[in-house]
Length: 298
Image (tube, rainbow, N blue to C red; front, side, top):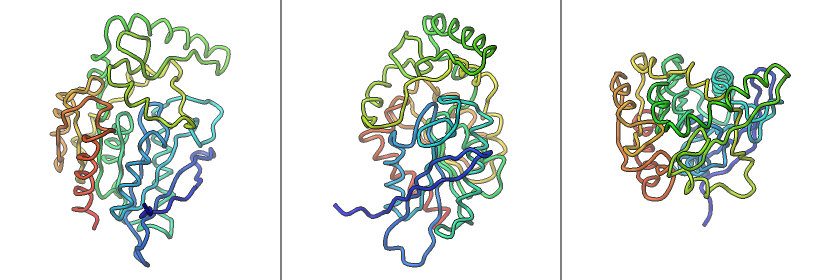
């Protein structure tokens, strides 16, 4: 089957660090410049972990997509590999948006955002703070500390706390992090110890740059970051995709803060946190997303 899009490798810089991105462009658009969707993955994720599939579908529907890896991840540079730092990631987002807006291959006046899980939280934050965003989608978004840490089982907490302490102590000797798994089964020492992680992780390509670990201190980033405080300040349309069986970003907490956004569209999907990336739930969601963006950018 002939692809209805082309994909280009593009580099941009975030605080002097080179970040790798894929620019997707629809074919057969003539001289028309397309609206552009800026995208990045969730906690510890890289661009080839199913977000490329979202970008392909968006591009087939007539959108340009700018899908990037954070510094220290995937195709991007950075000498603190696997580091997850909220302020740095938000700067990466800002730099990515500012860069692609200036491209002569897209319509820089029509910028849309798409984020999932932890980056769904970033999309909430950016949508409140930037005035140049037409609309945004936050898929199973991280919203606040209380909601997410409340999902940790006592067994998981007992296993992770010593690793966090050891990792903090390692800071005294430079960047020699004590690593913690990103995903694993319930009760294991992991940041996402949930039953539905395995099916999603099995879809990751064998040649992916994904590494299933990050510094244990990453858990402290949750204590400092609560995108839910910004939902009331989002003036532009934002679509909240809520997974009803989510054990990482609980549906009730997401819906509660989503309702504070004046132009919120909230839809629930009968799946877990990772289920929305796959199968019928993905098919339904991507159609809903395209319909939503079409209302505000076409």
